[in-house]
Image (cartoon, rainbow, N blue to C red; front, top):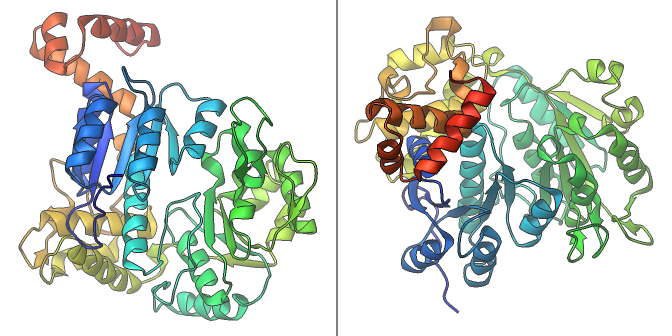
Length: 473
């Protein structure tokens, strides 16, 4: 059996193979991921992808579902058989419960229906790559979401010296060895999952750390994802499937964005927490599980309860220890400490020499509002490390690069506010590319189609769709 070479931690830029039969989409995704420091190879069909996989190693495969000759599920099966350690993400414009179940059962680490936000796509791809490299290096700091992982080791840290952060770490150290659930509240990007991993690392629990983002689950799949299902329980259930509670048995389960769980499922979740046992969909009897729960949200919980979106009794069951993480703008010099950590992380990843923030950039970082919090700071530093190349200082121009369409300029104490197009979907970017090709060819649909590598029929159908949507005249 042939196998792909696994990339070693810090062994150069992350490598992704993106497989889709639509050239405009391949081009958009390739350019977006390249701007985030990813080495992207594309293939127009699964057969070509199989040949490419044989010739070179990758950190991740991302494949469409519907393709000629060999579809995404067949490619997923090939990857699972020949490259079992290579994570794969399935994307599709024909999302359904059956597809999602088949994809996850077939070994996909994530499943993304089209259209999706560009930043969300990049974050998921980079998250999976970082997790794989961390697992390969043995530091246990991260792993693919929805997959069980070994207990994080002592390297898991919640970095910061601000008094509020120091107090949080001290509380976490005292709470971690207990069985008590912890409910973490904080703005997006403040480090809620990092704190959950820190709690698990300090707990001494022998089982895995498992995370599931409740906001990303299709409504029809919530129960299956949480509690599992038996073969034949519903259409598409071609085999038994463990839910995350069983996967996390003996360890810690992170219910990320728990306030987004469908209200109809919240009662069943409450029962699991009360009884300590789960019943898979289609199962005849429940099964006992030993799981420590950490839940997170960025929503106003009181508002969600008052509006009927979140059960108050479930909140009280989860919030034995409620914890609130401060936003980055309130953490003072922690901005510098975190930036230095991220510089070292990405400098090592790309094999670069020592780097630092230029004084002008550090001043602007310290004065910024950081609406995206620590995640936004990390993305800025990652960008700066890549674009500063061989220079030892990262300058403001490296993070405010004019050619980056989604770059957020830093403007004194009010900077880093996302531009309106920061969440442009791939469908919107495809529309822009088609219209630009038509403009460049004087409206000639045949020439525009040739330039984009699609049929003129595709161009006609897209234009008809845009007119029906009212996005063009």
